[in-house]
Length: 350
Image (cartoon, rainbow, N blue to C red; front, side, top):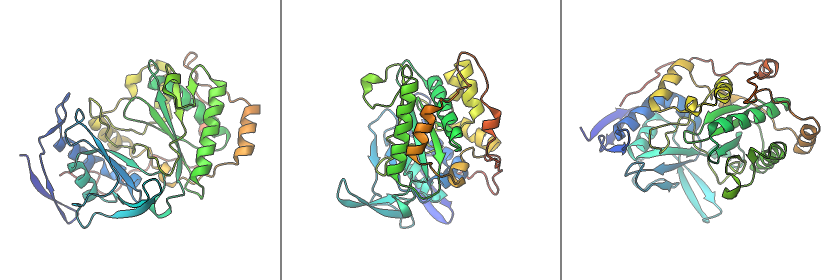
């Protein structure tokens, strides 16, 4: 079967070329891509809802030529919602897709939109990010193990500031750290704050951390990319597939998993393919749920950074000594997230 017509939430969708192989190394087909996004939709959709979505499409599979797509295509169904957002760079209004529901998500999957890149802000308030993000990008021979070390350093800094942070794999070679805000702020503030912390880490750990974007400085180090905190940039969505050799996905992980990977120095512990991600969600629910609802306020940068510089952060989770991070700091917040069991239908097959 190469084509099929399905009804999703009252919408009729024609699915085409279902047997087309999009991941040649594994034989993973478009049907597999659609099935993954249908199964992971209960976890993924809340993180896409209301956000301008940039898509990276691979019509000829991961070994073919991809293209980024921001504007909604002319042939979109009438029921696909969009958000008109002015682009100063191109001096025109861009009509971004809003992937608010399962039917839209499956329609995008049928277009081979393998990678989903949402804005850090809601489309209704595009200048107010609801989160701050650090993209940890390892320069070979460094890998995600070294990213885990940098993430632990960042986590302890944020604990010192009274803020919770949440890690996820990039689904590629690195990882990202998210600090939910969900309070009034600006991209200027989150960018300045994240840049200052990246520079602080670089000063304290020059052998492993770099905050400059120059490629030639990254060999064997972790680039702490603070520049993603920008109205005009996006970061790969949690649960999004990646265009790698295998159908890996950006996966929320626990701090215990970060610490274990660092201790064992085993990068393979944080590689998750599509089937793994669905199983994890069924077992663990959405570990990234707090990013949507936890309200936190960035402290004043002028007060925060000098305080951190004058009081060096103790990092307990060094790769060489295998100590555990402070449980007292870990449990600073009285509310526990990530344990909520999803209600209603967990899966929707097409």
